[in-house]
Image 1 (tube, rainbow, N blue to C red):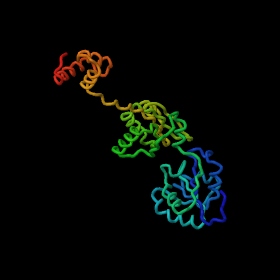
Image 2: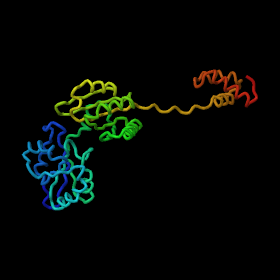
Image 3: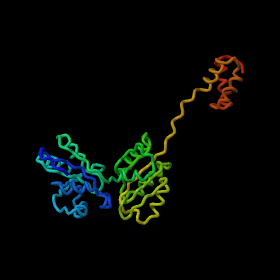
Image 4: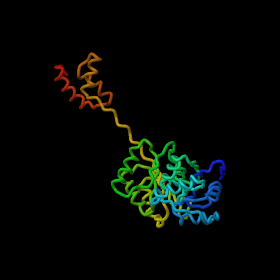
Length: 293
């Protein structure tokens, strides 16, 4: 971290921390945390092992979803008075389904420099090992708890033109969530990443039904958080509305000098309607045209 002595205003550093293995912390992130005047942590207890390893034993304050709005003014005031602040979450990149967006937005609006210190992110890590098409993907955060909201989420994913979806789930709810997908999206392909970079790391691949069976067979499946990458099946485009058989017969009769019987045979050869359907349409058309079969 390089201090700008010409600018008394501090900088807000959004620092990615490991999602499990502490060795995944980048050298730049370590330097930033050591040089920061204040480290705003989602949970100071969770961040303690990492900071202790770096030899940082002070300047920690809590910044979580329950106090992030009330703490914004305090942190902005410190930034405006020259403090260098590092924002970290429990694991991974702040603001990705973690606190931080409110502070970042407020700092940017106040003209305070906001710097990304890149590193681990569970969603991107899971996507990278999925093998799915990542030309574009949608991130949905944590699966909601209410049944109605879960159904709405599945509907959004399945109807989205972006066919790769990424979302988080807790170990206590993972089997219920995958069972719900097995019912709602049985043709989907899943890459379910559990406890990435940690003790119980495991990746489950397959349909929702296949993954559910593997999860239930694993006695440790309730240990560690989950990141799910889902490739939803492409819904076939709806067929264009077929013209009425009478329309096809009439069109053929207008372009060809023939009887309705001959028109039926010719139109049936195109495979749009069966001869039976076309004969019935020919009878209706005969009544309209007062012609003969």
